[in-house]
Image (cartoon, rainbow, N blue to C red; front, side, top):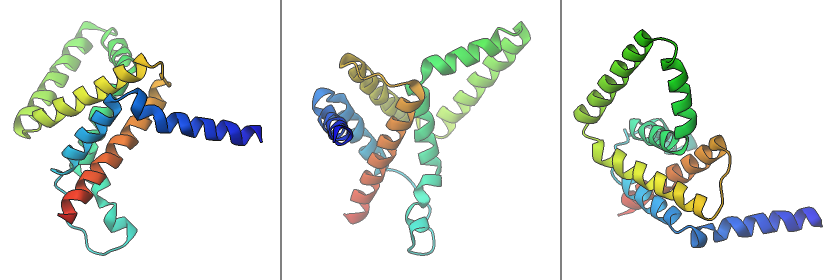
Length: 163
């Protein structure tokens, strides 16, 4: 009986979370809006795999990358800093690689606005969760926000397909 009460209490806390941290709702709205503009190639068939083909699209991978980078910045920066501390040559090569890839990615693919908006929404949701003292481990937070953003993007994609 105590286990059931603990499960019900944790589910209630999860359901009340958007009321305690309203910027999580903003993240859902932003992700749903971004999902409306996803370009998904048509796949033959009507099965479950055909309906989930958007998960392998470039837009979904880009969204996941933005969410992971914005939800685990300390862990990622610690790894990059450790790699750059190995030598000056490694620092220069890694910095040049990061700047070049980022410039090509953001300028040629014209996705800067979506990346900045989604990144800002993820960071605001993290700040709001920290304000109410809901701070899970970085990997769990990253997975949770990724699932939330992907489900919201799928909702936006579904809404635009019904119109």
